[in-house]
Image (cartoon, rainbow, N blue to C red; front, side, top):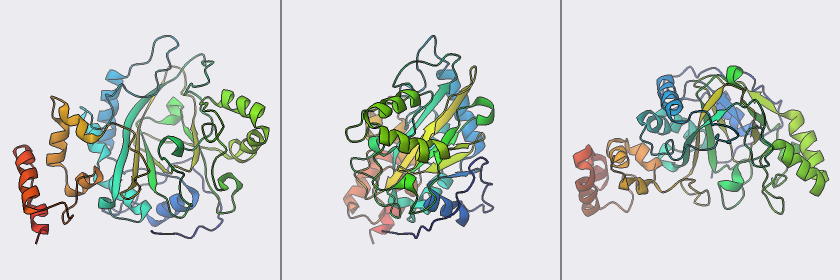
Length: 354
């Protein structure tokens, strides 16, 4: 397990996106200062990881399907399966497994692309409202939270040994639409906001799950006033808005404090959410139905993805890597028979047998 030293340091500014890396190498798209910021402070915003044409094509397809809701519907969580991997929208799938994005995740975790696994890829359209809903579970103005409770059966390990990387790919300029993500960056190992374990949030332990900021903090003020006071001092007083542009990517962690904020009335903010874990971190759950379940679709979208993906991309989906003990002459022949008509090339798997 890779460990990194995390000294107390000045918290960087997330108000502006970090400039794109100068390298064109898909294998190492992140600059060292970007990796260091994620490892030390818990989040970094990067441009240029996902090609803008994929983002724009996916956004256009999403807006055709995810129209603003009528009346008081919440309407900003999920897509009824339309934009959950694997999707019938080709650009969405391409963005999910894009080589630069996968390489960036591997850089952050200090491993190879073949040692990471996809556990989440879905897209939401969040719509602005003129009148807020009085609903404890509304997603418009979220309470400050960490994402691990619905991603892992355990608790994130110590800061220096993260299991996973979370990703938001923004398809809109949030300075126009609103709906910026607010983040509390970690200053270092003595930061009170990141005292371990991280449990001072609704939905953990005996605290009930409440999503709306107003309802959540009122609830905590009643049942755990010391927690409410701590959150006001160490979380809300320090939150920074991520002023993302179309194509900006927020890379953060399961134990990074953050929240969603309201979209401006009359606007829609589209965002693609992804999570990748270390291959060995089986306690980090896949949020969606198993990828193989999509093999039942008449479109054969998953079969074609498996057949035409790179070896690295297949590994990210859980396909055994060349040289894995599962591969034998018989299994190579069998998998080739299944996928070769769709373009599968078994040569690398066969070569690794020797």
